[in-house]
Image 1: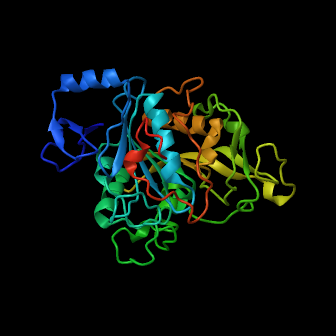
Image 2 (image 1 turned 120 degrees about the horizontal axis):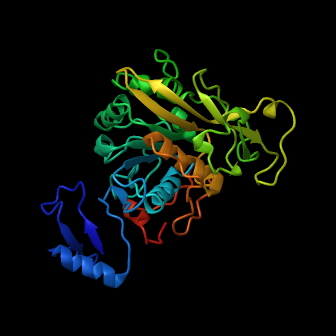
Image 3 (image 1 turned 90 degrees about the vertical axis):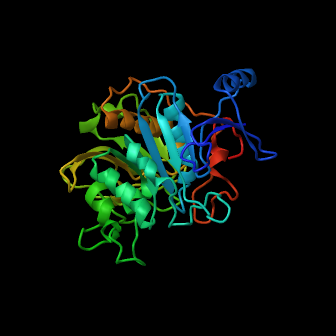
Length: 363
């Protein structure tokens, strides 16, 4: 199996090497030899360090642009959903996509329950877009500094589901980043409320009972982010949300009576009015830089089975980097995608970042 030692401290870092999974020896090889071998095997591999997976796009409007995906939530399987979005954006659109994970330091496996882990945060320095789904994280200050520096630099942010309450500093209120906490009183609502447009409020729909149908806001139907977007469905419930006046609402969430796309809408106040579930804003941060923000309270890994939601998110990336949105972006799935149902304690065990590499069937 061929690896590139990106971001490694190994003495051969940056060289093309052959890695033997049996003997774990690193054997220097000429680039020409590796190219011939890859052609003969007819396999496509993503490059990765031990703590991340990198998908290198080779053709499309995204070539030369870097998206960094931040996974890490205990409930909605961001460790499954975001790698699929990264594969689509790299394979179908040419972006370089780096996916970071919360890890178990003992064995290097993905551990969404570890709220204090984000190896590879330094890759945010070269990000053109930040794509996140996090919940109640308290990253080490060094990792959080990379995130805050990227935010203050004005990088665009696409934030899914529990990212409205991405950070929680209840146990470390003396941290220089405690103000980012979802319940901060001084910077009211923290990063979620101030930057993304909302913090954690409530389950508006009945959790795991009432699914969501996306209803495009009439006044926003010409927005390029909605170009080619058809039906939007997610089996996660609608969140309570009141975005600020400067937010542009793109989609509202219709609460359904059941968990299927064919279910009818709930009657009564839950859908009158319907809650916003997708919005954008241009946020001027403390340094005077403007962040393009796309926030959706949808985004569980199971929600991403919806072609409409995937297209909206891909369109959002195009909008974020200032490139014309395609008439109907290719958002077909890459490989098998059978996401785990959301819920606490339900993450797959023993999965390592490299298991998400292109061509690896393990996840």
